[in-house]
Length: 217
Image (cartoon, rainbow, N blue to C red; front, side):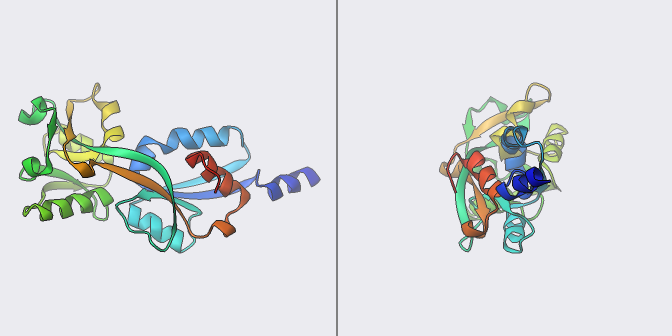
């Protein structure tokens, strides 16, 4: 009993509530979290997938201990810690006329039918804003809630889409899809970890953040 209580006090046991957007979950978090929990078999992780604005809302309302979100979403009232960087690419059917291109701009594809992500997605909101700045708009043919849904709709030739590199590249060999670089300075974006208060972090949460970022909190 004494050993068990000591483990709880030192942060070896317990649960950490993690909220993360789809980009982080589809690309980086599975391996990063697996590496962390391997040496902590008594530690439980509760991972919830949602949009970046929802992630930040969960941090603000103490429904999550840490959140992983897109830097495209404002979070001035929270502590932001750098996590990863990803790159947006264009995903199209393999026999699409644009598949021969090595890179393409948003302005060149804005008039194409699009497979869009759910309302609230930081990627979709950002693309809509960038298209508006160009004096045009994204022509959404169909909207879905997941990266997998986007890929399947593009594969069915219902439109093209913009997704993170890591949500496209691993699936190219097994699908009838092609990937074209998005030739925009903003195509590379940052993912951050959000917390409310450094001083209020539990030992296990601090250890997880250190593992994810490579830096002490």
